[in-house]
View 1 (tube, rainbow, N blue to C red):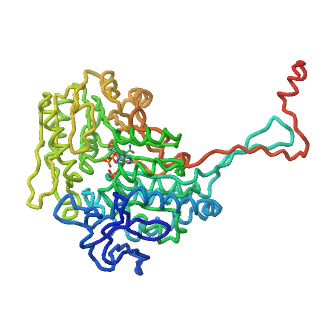
View 2: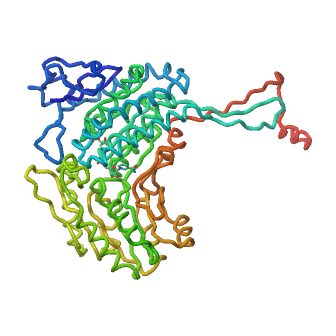
View 3: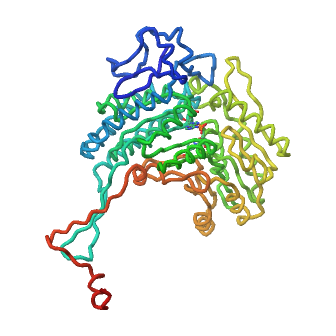
Length: 535
Ligand code: NAP
């Protein structure tokens, strides 16, 4: 049995139980060190955490929930205090390491992940459920982000500005924030932490990372990859535990200067409110209700492929998943037929056994939530064209058939609320004008696609669609390491992630005036004022 321990000050240690009492230590009183092989292992010396399960959380395979993959230590506010303390102690020394050297740690981490990609991708499929190809894709994305951020370490960090004063130079430079907290969701448990941790470290911050409770194994693997680079102890710390206990303690700790959060709107609002009490900087990336608009001149095969990939890839558990497709009358009938042909061919099953099958949803709560959203949509009058059922499976996996609804009322929950599962709503528009209106008629604003060959429709869509990422003739999903990623309206707050903009959240800009004239310089403004007898 694997155990996943906290990583604080360069050591793998058990957490304190949330009650504040240190209970249920594994028989060995585990404090793990490096694995000699360099490959992520995480076995306690005794192999089992018998008798201490009350202070460990089981990590289950959603395709086969009886299979426990490992046990993650539970933690309390005490563990956060220790982790933040460790990060605070080392941060000033970390920022003194030259930026390109800091970048080298990121490059080494990317190389480690690349070497071990099959192990990591398998782990990801086992604990989150997405199929093996999707897992490989996610791991590759994390690698690309790390490589990109490593390369940023050799690029300019500020700008040189002209001065009104003679003999004076003005330039801007960057300053780290200090200790930053990173709170991440389960749906991309490798690449989202990577795209937050990499720019945070690049800018000279020390990090306390609180991963989603449902995906402890991949979080451990990522941190282990950083450990393998020789990162100084305390620069990156990992604390397992529930969001309400550990997450709240991280946000409330006055030594933490910023929180980068990705997750649901409900929790994002709580994170924001708690952080605002002490003016702590926050970055929030939250839900989506992403539309695809298909116009009369679209390549319908291409559009149908993209909608299927966007709606049912990763079992619809992507923030950028296509959840609404908006059709104009001219192509409606043919498009729906093409769509259903494809959806009915989707294989559903364990993504480890069949690397292309649509996997389960992540856990029982998600399973119940998606099925209940389907029931509600039926009650609200939407018509099921296919799917809508739990899929019986002898292993008890959380499988749901890919579901398509038609005749969806634009004001209904199905059209307005994020379901985060394999459910697609078809909406009808009389023309492009109305399609654009429907596309914008939600509180979210992450990604949107348009399928057409018409340049003026494309330009108009690009200008008027309210979202952070636009795709023309491609699916709503996906994003490259060098491109900014994030949403508007109630999806995102606090700046973009990835790309050149990614590091901006994790630093302050400092403006420096240098008078190399060695005498007090006068500005043109002061001379002007004197001429006018203003002083
Ligand atoms: P979630 O329930 O909001 O949890 C996200 C993280 O917050 C987890 O680590 C969670 O810990 C923690 N948390 C929970 N309660 C907390 C609290 N009171 N204080 C501090 N932290 C707390 O979201 P999820 O179910 O993991 O992820 C799905 C959501 O993420 C969807 O809405 C999806 O759209 C969104 N998402 C957005 C993006 C984007 O870039 N826009 C990308 C991916 C996902 P526990 O796991 O211990 O509860």
